[in-house]
Image (cartoon, rainbow, N blue to C red; front, side):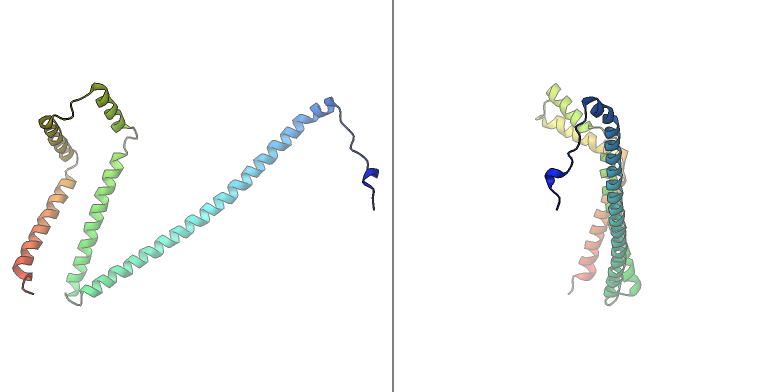
Length: 182
């Protein structure tokens, strides 16, 4: 066995030797830190890529699942209706859902453009000017003007809403005439 006292002690370096080795030590430290960052980033990017690929696979399988469910809906409806009518009903429902999702998405997207806090700025300006908020005729006129501007800017939601009300009304009349005898 070796005696710890017998091992040679490291020699103490002078201040000048320490200062002379400082740039080399800092350079080594910086290189090691950069390598550590690279390694960590590569590991995280691999995990992100693998996770994104698996999520994409899950979305694709889910789309197939929805296709199977839609086929099932058509087959189920074809038990009481002709097959073409069942497919038309399912397609109409899908179209209605797509239009609603598209319009809602469009409105949400347009709220974010431009990315400036316009509502906060307007609120602060109203607070600064201390506008009379309880004047009902004035507020009603403002709301009517906002509705007119909204219709002129994008009439599609108004038209779709009117068409939906018309479809519901026609459906109710048809149900009252032809389908209420059960």
